[in-house]
Amino acid sequence: MKEFLNGFFKIEERGSSITKELLGGLTIFLAMVYILPVNADILSTTGMSFAAVFAATAVAAAVASLMMGLYANYPIGLASGMGVNAFFTYTIVLTLGFTWQEALGAVLVSGVLFLTISLTGLRKIVINAIPKNLKIAVGAGIGFFIAFIGLKNAGIVVDNMATYVSLGELNHPTILLALFGIILVFVLHSIGGKIGRFAVIISIVVTGFIGILLGAIFPSLTALMPTLSGANLGSLGDVKDTFGQAFLALPSLLSNPMAYAVIFSLLFVDFFDTAGTLVAVGHDAGLISKEGELIGGDRALISDATGTIAGAIIGTSNVTSYIESTTGIKQGARTGLSAAVVGLLFLLSLFLFKFFAFVGSIPVTLGSGASIFVSPATSLALVYVGALMASQLKEIDWKDNVAVTTTFIVIIMMVLAYSISEGIAFGFIFYVILMVASKRAKEVNPVMYVLAFLFIGYYLIKFLLFV
Image (cartoon, rainbow, N blue to C red; front, side):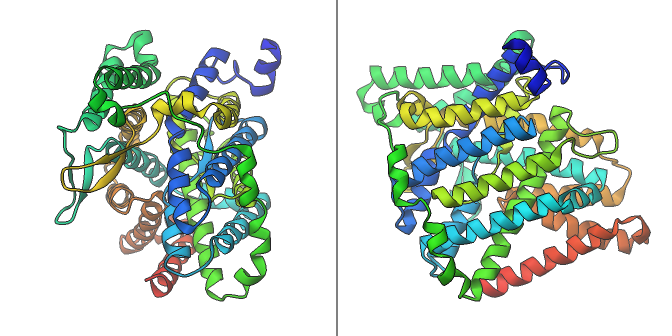
Protein backbone atom coordinates (compact mmCIF):
# COMPACT_ATOMS: atom_id res chain seq x y z
CA MET A 1 0.00 0.00 0.00
CA LYS A 2 2.83 2.39 0.87
CA GLU A 3 4.47 1.87 -2.52
CA PHE A 4 1.15 2.32 -4.32
CA LEU A 5 0.38 5.59 -2.53
CA ASN A 6 3.90 6.89 -3.15
CA GLY A 7 3.67 6.06 -6.85
CA PHE A 8 0.11 7.27 -7.41
CA PHE A 9 0.39 10.58 -5.55
CA LYS A 10 4.14 11.15 -6.18
CA ILE A 11 4.58 11.68 -2.45
CA GLU A 12 8.34 11.20 -2.17
CA GLU A 13 8.89 12.98 -5.48
CA ARG A 14 7.31 16.09 -3.99
CA GLY A 15 9.33 15.82 -0.80
CA SER A 16 6.48 14.69 1.42
CA SER A 17 5.53 11.55 3.34
CA ILE A 18 2.33 9.61 3.95
CA THR A 19 2.27 10.81 7.55
CA LYS A 20 2.57 14.44 6.48
CA GLU A 21 -0.21 13.98 3.93
CA LEU A 22 -2.57 12.36 6.42
CA LEU A 23 -1.86 15.03 9.01
CA GLY A 24 -2.21 17.76 6.40
CA GLY A 25 -5.56 16.39 5.26
CA LEU A 26 -6.86 16.24 8.82
CA THR A 27 -5.67 19.81 9.46
CA ILE A 28 -7.34 21.11 6.29
CA PHE A 29 -10.59 19.36 7.21
CA LEU A 30 -10.60 20.77 10.74
CA ALA A 31 -10.03 24.26 9.31
CA MET A 32 -12.90 23.80 6.83
CA VAL A 33 -15.54 21.81 8.73
CA TYR A 34 -17.16 24.97 10.09
CA ILE A 35 -18.73 25.41 6.63
CA LEU A 36 -21.23 22.60 7.27
CA PRO A 37 -23.41 24.32 9.89
CA VAL A 38 -22.63 27.85 8.66
CA ASN A 39 -23.53 27.19 5.01
CA ALA A 40 -26.69 25.36 6.04
CA ASP A 41 -27.67 28.29 8.25
CA ILE A 42 -27.14 30.87 5.48
CA LEU A 43 -28.87 28.96 2.66
CA SER A 44 -31.79 27.88 4.86
CA THR A 45 -32.75 31.56 5.01
CA THR A 46 -34.03 31.13 1.44
CA GLY A 47 -36.50 28.45 2.55
CA MET A 48 -34.23 25.49 1.86
CA SER A 49 -34.16 22.65 4.40
CA PHE A 50 -31.30 23.11 6.88
CA ALA A 51 -30.72 19.36 7.06
CA ALA A 52 -30.75 19.02 3.26
CA VAL A 53 -28.22 21.84 2.78
CA PHE A 54 -26.03 20.46 5.57
CA ALA A 55 -25.94 17.04 3.90
CA ALA A 56 -25.55 18.49 0.39
CA THR A 57 -22.64 20.64 1.55
CA ALA A 58 -20.88 17.60 3.01
CA VAL A 59 -21.46 15.41 -0.06
CA ALA A 60 -20.42 18.12 -2.54
CA ALA A 61 -17.28 18.85 -0.51
CA ALA A 62 -16.46 15.14 -0.46
CA VAL A 63 -16.95 14.70 -4.22
CA ALA A 64 -14.93 17.78 -5.14
CA SER A 65 -12.10 17.14 -2.67
CA LEU A 66 -11.77 13.51 -3.74
CA MET A 67 -11.59 14.57 -7.38
CA MET A 68 -9.02 17.25 -6.54
CA GLY A 69 -6.92 14.62 -4.81
CA LEU A 70 -7.34 11.63 -7.12
CA TYR A 71 -7.51 13.47 -10.46
CA ALA A 72 -5.55 16.70 -10.02
CA ASN A 73 -3.19 15.50 -7.25
CA TYR A 74 -3.41 18.88 -5.52
CA PRO A 75 -3.41 19.30 -1.71
CA ILE A 76 -6.55 21.41 -1.77
CA GLY A 77 -9.87 20.86 -0.03
CA LEU A 78 -13.08 22.15 -1.60
CA ALA A 79 -16.51 23.04 -0.25
CA SER A 80 -19.28 25.61 -0.69
CA GLY A 81 -17.64 29.03 -0.70
CA MET A 82 -18.21 31.69 1.91
CA GLY A 83 -19.24 34.98 0.34
CA VAL A 84 -20.80 33.40 -2.72
CA ASN A 85 -23.30 31.64 -0.43
CA ALA A 86 -24.28 35.05 0.92
CA PHE A 87 -24.64 36.32 -2.66
CA PHE A 88 -26.82 33.26 -3.39
CA THR A 89 -29.07 33.98 -0.42
CA TYR A 90 -29.24 37.72 0.09
CA THR A 91 -28.86 38.97 -3.49
CA ILE A 92 -30.16 36.31 -5.88
CA VAL A 93 -33.07 35.07 -3.76
CA LEU A 94 -33.99 37.70 -1.17
CA THR A 95 -33.21 40.83 -3.25
CA LEU A 96 -33.74 39.84 -6.89
CA GLY A 97 -36.65 37.52 -6.13
CA PHE A 98 -35.43 34.28 -7.71
CA THR A 99 -36.53 31.06 -6.02
CA TRP A 100 -33.87 28.96 -4.33
CA GLN A 101 -34.44 26.35 -7.02
CA GLU A 102 -33.68 28.93 -9.73
CA ALA A 103 -30.60 30.05 -7.77
CA LEU A 104 -29.35 26.46 -7.81
CA GLY A 105 -30.00 26.43 -11.57
CA ALA A 106 -27.83 29.54 -11.95
CA VAL A 107 -25.06 27.84 -9.97
CA LEU A 108 -25.35 24.80 -12.26
CA VAL A 109 -25.05 26.86 -15.44
CA SER A 110 -22.10 28.85 -14.05
CA GLY A 111 -20.40 25.56 -13.17
CA VAL A 112 -20.86 24.21 -16.70
CA LEU A 113 -19.39 27.42 -18.13
CA PHE A 114 -16.48 27.21 -15.70
CA LEU A 115 -15.82 23.63 -16.78
CA THR A 116 -15.90 24.70 -20.44
CA ILE A 117 -13.32 27.42 -19.78
CA SER A 118 -11.11 24.93 -17.96
CA LEU A 119 -11.31 22.34 -20.76
CA THR A 120 -10.59 24.80 -23.58
CA GLY A 121 -7.27 25.97 -22.18
CA LEU A 122 -8.49 29.55 -21.68
CA ARG A 123 -7.68 29.11 -18.00
CA LYS A 124 -3.97 28.65 -18.74
CA ILE A 125 -3.87 31.72 -20.95
CA VAL A 126 -5.51 33.85 -18.26
CA ILE A 127 -3.44 32.72 -15.27
CA ASN A 128 -0.13 32.77 -17.15
CA ALA A 129 -0.82 36.30 -18.39
CA ILE A 130 -0.74 37.63 -14.83
CA PRO A 131 2.68 39.21 -14.09
CA LYS A 132 4.82 37.68 -11.32
CA ASN A 133 4.51 40.66 -8.95
CA LEU A 134 0.73 40.59 -9.24
CA LYS A 135 0.64 36.84 -8.55
CA ILE A 136 2.71 37.36 -5.42
CA ALA A 137 0.44 40.23 -4.37
CA VAL A 138 -2.60 37.97 -4.75
CA GLY A 139 -1.00 35.27 -2.59
CA ALA A 140 0.00 37.73 0.13
CA GLY A 141 -3.36 39.48 -0.09
CA ILE A 142 -5.14 36.21 0.48
CA GLY A 143 -3.00 35.80 3.60
CA PHE A 144 -4.25 39.10 5.00
CA PHE A 145 -7.79 38.19 3.92
CA ILE A 146 -7.92 34.84 5.69
CA ALA A 147 -6.27 36.31 8.78
CA PHE A 148 -9.08 38.87 8.83
CA ILE A 149 -11.62 36.05 8.47
CA GLY A 150 -9.92 34.26 11.35
CA LEU A 151 -10.09 37.33 13.59
CA LYS A 152 -13.75 37.76 12.63
CA ASN A 153 -14.51 34.09 13.32
CA ALA A 154 -12.78 34.49 16.68
CA GLY A 155 -14.99 37.46 17.59
CA ILE A 156 -11.88 39.60 18.05
CA VAL A 157 -12.95 41.84 15.17
CA VAL A 158 -16.66 42.69 15.00
CA ASP A 159 -19.07 44.96 13.15
CA ASN A 160 -19.33 48.59 14.21
CA MET A 161 -21.90 50.99 12.75
CA ALA A 162 -19.62 54.00 13.20
CA THR A 163 -16.25 52.58 12.16
CA TYR A 164 -17.38 49.46 10.21
CA VAL A 165 -15.09 47.20 12.28
CA SER A 166 -13.79 47.41 15.83
CA LEU A 167 -12.28 45.30 18.60
CA GLY A 168 -14.65 42.67 19.97
CA GLU A 169 -15.65 42.08 23.57
CA LEU A 170 -12.53 40.41 24.93
CA ASN A 171 -14.25 39.75 28.26
CA HIS A 172 -16.59 37.21 26.63
CA PRO A 173 -15.63 33.60 27.53
CA THR A 174 -15.96 32.25 23.97
CA ILE A 175 -13.91 35.07 22.47
CA LEU A 176 -11.30 34.70 25.20
CA LEU A 177 -11.00 31.00 24.33
CA ALA A 178 -10.48 31.90 20.66
CA LEU A 179 -7.83 34.47 21.64
CA PHE A 180 -6.09 31.83 23.75
CA GLY A 181 -5.98 29.52 20.71
CA ILE A 182 -4.41 32.22 18.52
CA ILE A 183 -1.76 32.98 21.14
CA LEU A 184 -1.06 29.27 21.60
CA VAL A 185 -0.50 28.54 17.90
CA PHE A 186 1.99 31.41 17.57
CA VAL A 187 3.80 30.38 20.76
CA LEU A 188 4.17 26.82 19.47
CA HIS A 189 5.32 28.12 16.08
CA SER A 190 7.92 30.31 17.78
CA ILE A 191 9.26 27.32 19.74
CA GLY A 192 9.99 25.60 16.45
CA GLY A 193 11.15 22.02 15.98
CA LYS A 194 8.58 19.22 15.87
CA ILE A 195 6.20 21.20 18.08
CA GLY A 196 6.33 24.08 15.63
CA ARG A 197 5.51 21.79 12.69
CA PHE A 198 2.45 20.49 14.51
CA ALA A 199 1.46 23.89 15.90
CA VAL A 200 -1.91 24.08 14.14
CA ILE A 201 -3.26 20.62 14.93
CA ILE A 202 -2.00 20.77 18.54
CA SER A 203 -3.59 24.18 19.06
CA ILE A 204 -6.94 23.12 17.56
CA VAL A 205 -7.15 20.03 19.77
CA VAL A 206 -5.93 21.77 22.94
CA THR A 207 -8.25 24.75 22.47
CA GLY A 208 -11.22 22.49 21.80
CA PHE A 209 -10.40 20.25 24.79
CA ILE A 210 -10.03 23.22 27.15
CA GLY A 211 -13.38 24.57 25.95
CA ILE A 212 -15.07 21.21 26.53
CA LEU A 213 -13.49 20.98 29.99
CA LEU A 214 -14.59 24.50 30.96
CA GLY A 215 -18.12 23.75 29.81
CA ALA A 216 -18.19 20.59 31.93
CA ILE A 217 -16.77 22.25 35.06
CA PHE A 218 -18.81 25.45 34.88
CA PRO A 219 -22.48 24.82 33.87
CA SER A 220 -22.97 28.53 33.12
CA LEU A 221 -20.39 28.24 30.33
CA THR A 222 -21.71 25.04 28.75
CA ALA A 223 -23.61 26.81 25.93
CA LEU A 224 -20.63 29.09 25.25
CA MET A 225 -17.98 26.41 24.85
CA PRO A 226 -17.13 23.74 22.25
CA THR A 227 -18.86 20.43 22.80
CA LEU A 228 -18.76 16.81 21.72
CA SER A 229 -22.41 16.21 22.47
CA GLY A 230 -23.85 17.75 19.31
CA ALA A 231 -26.33 15.64 17.38
CA ASN A 232 -26.07 14.95 13.66
CA LEU A 233 -27.51 17.96 11.87
CA GLY A 234 -28.24 16.28 8.56
CA SER A 235 -28.03 12.88 6.90
CA LEU A 236 -27.68 11.56 3.37
CA GLY A 237 -31.42 10.91 3.17
CA ASP A 238 -32.19 14.62 3.62
CA VAL A 239 -30.62 15.42 0.23
CA LYS A 240 -33.85 14.24 -1.44
CA ASP A 241 -35.34 17.69 -0.65
CA THR A 242 -32.86 19.52 -2.88
CA PHE A 243 -31.45 16.91 -5.27
CA GLY A 244 -32.13 17.71 -8.95
CA GLN A 245 -34.09 20.90 -8.25
CA ALA A 246 -31.56 22.89 -10.30
CA PHE A 247 -32.57 21.06 -13.49
CA LEU A 248 -36.29 21.57 -12.88
CA ALA A 249 -35.81 25.32 -12.42
CA LEU A 250 -33.79 25.93 -15.61
CA PRO A 251 -36.77 26.86 -17.89
CA SER A 252 -38.06 29.57 -15.55
CA LEU A 253 -34.54 30.75 -14.74
CA LEU A 254 -33.41 31.21 -18.35
CA SER A 255 -36.64 32.99 -19.28
CA ASN A 256 -35.64 35.83 -16.94
CA PRO A 257 -33.20 38.29 -18.64
CA MET A 258 -31.64 39.19 -15.29
CA ALA A 259 -30.57 35.56 -14.85
CA TYR A 260 -27.70 35.99 -17.31
CA ALA A 261 -26.15 38.75 -15.22
CA VAL A 262 -26.51 36.52 -12.15
CA ILE A 263 -24.86 33.59 -13.92
CA PHE A 264 -22.00 35.81 -15.14
CA SER A 265 -21.45 37.11 -11.60
CA LEU A 266 -21.33 33.59 -10.15
CA LEU A 267 -18.89 32.50 -12.88
CA PHE A 268 -16.72 35.55 -12.33
CA VAL A 269 -16.44 35.10 -8.57
CA ASP A 270 -15.88 31.34 -8.79
CA PHE A 271 -13.19 31.54 -11.48
CA PHE A 272 -11.10 34.29 -9.93
CA ASP A 273 -11.50 33.10 -6.34
CA THR A 274 -10.24 29.71 -7.50
CA ALA A 275 -7.47 31.18 -9.64
CA GLY A 276 -6.26 33.28 -6.72
CA THR A 277 -6.37 30.32 -4.35
CA LEU A 278 -4.52 28.04 -6.78
CA VAL A 279 -1.76 30.60 -7.29
CA ALA A 280 -1.35 31.07 -3.53
CA VAL A 281 -1.52 27.39 -2.65
CA GLY A 282 0.61 26.39 -5.65
CA HIS A 283 3.30 28.82 -4.56
CA ASP A 284 3.43 27.44 -1.01
CA ALA A 285 3.25 23.81 -2.17
CA GLY A 286 6.00 24.19 -4.79
CA LEU A 287 3.59 23.52 -7.63
CA ILE A 288 4.61 26.49 -9.77
CA SER A 289 7.20 25.86 -12.47
CA LYS A 290 10.28 27.99 -13.17
CA GLU A 291 8.24 29.71 -15.87
CA GLY A 292 5.68 30.74 -13.25
CA GLU A 293 3.01 28.30 -14.48
CA LEU A 294 0.87 26.08 -12.28
CA ILE A 295 1.87 22.43 -12.63
CA GLY A 296 -1.30 20.50 -13.45
CA GLY A 297 -3.42 23.59 -12.89
CA ASP A 298 -5.88 22.61 -15.62
CA ARG A 299 -6.89 19.47 -13.73
CA ALA A 300 -7.29 21.47 -10.53
CA LEU A 301 -9.69 23.89 -12.21
CA ILE A 302 -11.62 21.04 -13.83
CA SER A 303 -12.02 19.48 -10.37
CA ASP A 304 -13.23 22.79 -8.97
CA ALA A 305 -15.75 23.29 -11.76
CA THR A 306 -17.00 19.73 -11.45
CA GLY A 307 -17.48 20.33 -7.73
CA THR A 308 -19.72 23.31 -8.45
CA ILE A 309 -21.81 21.27 -10.91
CA ALA A 310 -22.15 18.41 -8.44
CA GLY A 311 -22.99 20.81 -5.63
CA ALA A 312 -25.73 22.50 -7.64
CA ILE A 313 -27.29 19.15 -8.53
CA ILE A 314 -27.15 17.93 -4.92
CA GLY A 315 -28.35 21.21 -3.45
CA THR A 316 -25.74 23.79 -2.43
CA SER A 317 -24.12 26.99 -3.70
CA ASN A 318 -20.86 27.24 -5.66
CA VAL A 319 -18.14 24.86 -4.51
CA THR A 320 -14.69 26.40 -4.56
CA SER A 321 -11.09 25.69 -3.58
CA TYR A 322 -10.48 26.65 0.04
CA ILE A 323 -7.62 28.91 0.98
CA GLU A 324 -7.74 27.13 4.35
CA SER A 325 -5.88 24.38 2.50
CA THR A 326 -2.70 26.30 3.26
CA THR A 327 -3.06 25.09 6.86
CA GLY A 328 -2.34 21.56 5.62
CA ILE A 329 0.49 22.71 3.38
CA LYS A 330 2.16 24.30 6.39
CA GLN A 331 1.95 20.84 7.98
CA GLY A 332 3.87 19.39 5.02
CA ALA A 333 1.09 18.27 2.64
CA ARG A 334 2.16 18.44 -1.00
CA THR A 335 -0.04 15.93 -2.84
CA GLY A 336 -3.61 14.93 -3.54
CA LEU A 337 -3.57 12.34 -0.75
CA SER A 338 -4.32 15.12 1.72
CA ALA A 339 -7.27 16.28 -0.40
CA ALA A 340 -8.56 12.70 -0.59
CA VAL A 341 -8.40 12.56 3.22
CA VAL A 342 -10.45 15.76 3.36
CA GLY A 343 -13.05 14.23 1.06
CA LEU A 344 -13.34 11.04 3.12
CA LEU A 345 -13.64 13.04 6.35
CA PHE A 346 -16.47 15.12 4.89
CA LEU A 347 -18.31 11.89 4.07
CA LEU A 348 -17.60 10.64 7.58
CA SER A 349 -18.91 13.87 9.07
CA LEU A 350 -22.40 12.99 7.83
CA PHE A 351 -22.45 10.10 10.26
CA LEU A 352 -20.14 11.31 12.99
CA PHE A 353 -20.54 15.07 13.03
CA LYS A 354 -20.90 15.13 16.80
CA PHE A 355 -17.28 14.00 17.09
CA PHE A 356 -16.23 17.07 15.11
CA ALA A 357 -18.64 19.37 16.89
CA PHE A 358 -15.86 20.97 18.95
CA VAL A 359 -14.58 22.75 15.81
CA GLY A 360 -18.01 24.11 14.92
CA SER A 361 -19.34 27.64 15.29
CA ILE A 362 -20.87 28.76 18.60
CA PRO A 363 -23.69 31.34 18.59
CA VAL A 364 -22.71 34.27 20.81
CA THR A 365 -24.78 37.28 21.88
CA LEU A 366 -22.61 40.31 22.61
CA GLY A 367 -23.29 42.96 25.22
CA SER A 368 -24.43 45.27 22.42
CA GLY A 369 -27.17 42.79 21.57
CA ALA A 370 -25.53 41.73 18.31
CA SER A 371 -25.39 38.01 17.52
CA ILE A 372 -22.30 36.46 15.97
CA PHE A 373 -20.82 32.99 15.44
CA VAL A 374 -17.44 32.27 17.04
CA SER A 375 -15.20 29.33 16.08
CA PRO A 376 -12.57 29.14 18.84
CA ALA A 377 -10.88 25.96 17.62
CA THR A 378 -10.50 26.85 13.94
CA SER A 379 -10.13 30.63 13.78
CA LEU A 380 -6.59 30.25 15.11
CA ALA A 381 -5.57 28.26 12.02
CA LEU A 382 -6.71 31.04 9.68
CA VAL A 383 -4.87 33.78 11.57
CA TYR A 384 -1.72 31.65 11.79
CA VAL A 385 -1.63 30.74 8.10
CA GLY A 386 -2.49 34.30 7.10
CA ALA A 387 0.55 35.55 8.99
CA LEU A 388 2.80 32.99 7.28
CA MET A 389 1.45 33.82 3.81
CA ALA A 390 2.27 37.49 4.31
CA SER A 391 5.95 36.49 4.04
CA GLN A 392 5.48 36.26 0.27
CA LEU A 393 5.69 40.05 0.19
CA LYS A 394 9.48 39.80 0.44
CA GLU A 395 9.49 38.63 -3.20
CA ILE A 396 7.78 41.79 -4.50
CA ASP A 397 10.02 44.11 -6.52
CA TRP A 398 9.80 47.07 -4.12
CA LYS A 399 11.74 49.29 -6.54
CA ASP A 400 8.89 49.02 -9.05
CA ASN A 401 6.32 51.73 -8.24
CA VAL A 402 3.58 49.95 -10.18
CA ALA A 403 4.22 46.68 -8.30
CA VAL A 404 4.13 48.46 -4.94
CA THR A 405 0.90 50.30 -5.70
CA THR A 406 -0.95 47.33 -7.16
CA THR A 407 0.17 45.13 -4.25
CA PHE A 408 -1.33 47.63 -1.82
CA ILE A 409 -4.57 47.85 -3.81
CA VAL A 410 -4.94 44.05 -4.02
CA ILE A 411 -4.42 43.59 -0.28
CA ILE A 412 -6.54 46.48 0.96
CA MET A 413 -9.46 45.65 -1.35
CA MET A 414 -9.44 41.93 -0.51
CA VAL A 415 -9.69 42.74 3.18
CA LEU A 416 -12.09 45.68 3.11
CA ALA A 417 -14.35 44.32 0.35
CA TYR A 418 -14.19 40.90 2.05
CA SER A 419 -13.59 39.16 -1.27
CA ILE A 420 -10.60 37.60 -3.01
CA SER A 421 -12.09 38.30 -6.44
CA GLU A 422 -12.73 42.00 -5.68
CA GLY A 423 -9.09 42.41 -4.66
CA ILE A 424 -7.96 40.71 -7.86
CA ALA A 425 -10.32 42.86 -9.96
CA PHE A 426 -9.12 46.16 -8.52
CA GLY A 427 -5.50 45.02 -8.74
CA PHE A 428 -5.84 44.14 -12.43
CA ILE A 429 -7.58 47.40 -13.29
CA PHE A 430 -5.03 49.52 -11.43
CA TYR A 431 -2.14 47.54 -12.92
CA VAL A 432 -3.22 48.28 -16.50
CA ILE A 433 -3.96 51.94 -15.78
CA LEU A 434 -0.63 52.50 -14.03
CA MET A 435 1.42 50.65 -16.65
CA VAL A 436 -0.12 52.78 -19.38
CA ALA A 437 0.37 55.98 -17.35
CA SER A 438 4.03 55.13 -16.73
CA LYS A 439 4.57 54.56 -20.47
CA ARG A 440 5.11 50.81 -20.05
CA ALA A 441 2.08 49.70 -22.01
CA LYS A 442 4.14 47.39 -24.24
CA GLU A 443 5.16 45.34 -21.18
CA VAL A 444 1.53 44.43 -20.47
CA ASN A 445 0.28 41.09 -21.78
CA PRO A 446 -2.70 41.73 -24.14
CA VAL A 447 -4.78 39.34 -22.04
CA MET A 448 -4.41 41.72 -19.09
CA TYR A 449 -6.05 44.50 -21.09
CA VAL A 450 -8.95 42.19 -21.89
CA LEU A 451 -9.31 41.14 -18.26
CA ALA A 452 -9.21 44.73 -17.01
CA PHE A 453 -12.03 45.71 -19.39
CA LEU A 454 -14.02 42.61 -18.39
CA PHE A 455 -13.65 43.55 -14.73
CA ILE A 456 -14.87 47.05 -15.49
CA GLY A 457 -17.80 45.55 -17.40
CA TYR A 458 -18.53 43.27 -14.44
CA TYR A 459 -18.82 46.25 -12.11
CA LEU A 460 -21.05 48.11 -14.54
CA ILE A 461 -23.38 45.11 -14.68
CA LYS A 462 -23.20 44.51 -10.95
CA PHE A 463 -24.03 48.04 -9.90
CA LEU A 464 -26.60 48.68 -12.62
CA LEU A 465 -28.58 45.54 -11.84
CA PHE A 466 -27.85 44.61 -8.23
CA VAL A 467 -28.13 47.93 -6.42
